[in-house]
Length: 343
Image 1 (cartoon, rainbow, N blue to C red):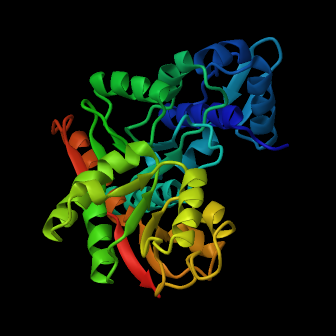
Image 2 (tube, rainbow, N blue to C red):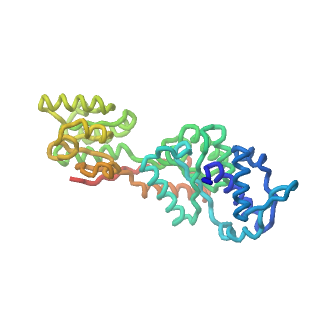
Image 3 (spheres, rainbow, N blue to C red):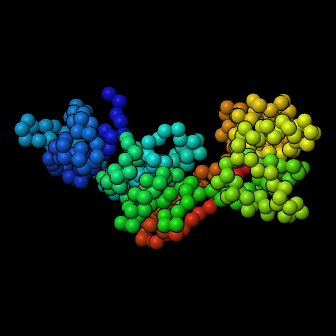
């Protein structure tokens, strides 16, 4: 039977109790009590208790209760001095996670192993009831939490845990009360604008959502000022549909852009003519997220990516600072994206 996030939560709690018992057999909470403590269904607890019984971790005495097997403590003796760090993404449901977040989560896990000698533990929720997040995270008995792009409900629980003394660091996120590691979008905008101007581009169109454009804009404007161009010449689109319509009109009037920052390359690629769809940098130089190259290997231009390894290293440093007693609540580390040329 496939285990769900809820059943894994039950298993983790049982293993924690075995570890804390230090070789002694202890009575486990009933399935009703455990379900209430972990905010999961009684059926889930009963099914996981049966699996653990079949695996010889626990045993039941009819009419008395369920108990741990003391000899299984041996496997966790070494773990007594290893920190348990929870790592979560978004709202904890792990649906449609962007590749940079998966990559950053993996890098965080590796850094925890290598630098803190800690045990990374993926945190998975089975529902989005915000009332459960705080209790579920407390039930995990984590020594610290790393959370990537937390949803508003999860962020509220993280803030509360942080106020209660739990070491917490968030990534790809902004907060005035939690330690943060995120991308430096202003520096990235400057980096990309410089790269486009260096390649001779002057009519540059920027296609991205409004929020990111406002974060990129200070860096972009700094480059325009250095190039003696007024900021009014920055051409921004937040709709790929409108971008394509305007691009096609510009082609008809022989004044198309010679450089574009492309946030929706798949949509635009199929709607623009050959030579203008990221296949000929001499006519129009595209900037795009490096992750699309796996699906669109023929793209040519400037690829950008998150520096996830550096972001993970900074996040683990901030987490360790808190474990070591430092107050880093207002700390925000910003790391610009990197670029590579695919011409």
